[in-house]
Length: 80
View 1 (tube, helix red, strand yellow):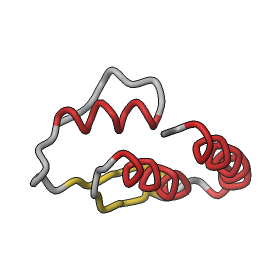
View 2 (view 1 turned 60 degrees about the vertical axis):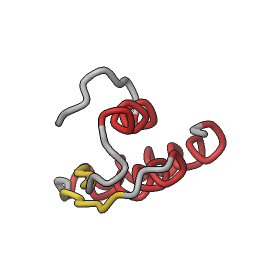
View 3 (view 1 turned 180 degrees about the vertical axis):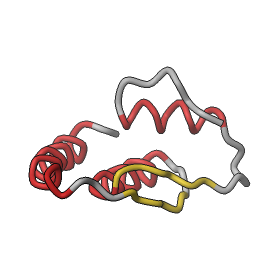
């Protein structure tokens, strides 16, 4: 199943939660730098999930990690 309405990670997980059954196994596939926050949000809204992260081009790593660091802080306070 693919969720296609969301405009954010938080929305994606909320809409996904509506699509799954409690006994379903969930695998979140995303960028390796994004996996921590995605699993954090999933746990917060009650989705038990495993994660699989894909790697980035080495030239993208610094920018991606700085952006994700700020997103983790924002998510901690707002995605509830």
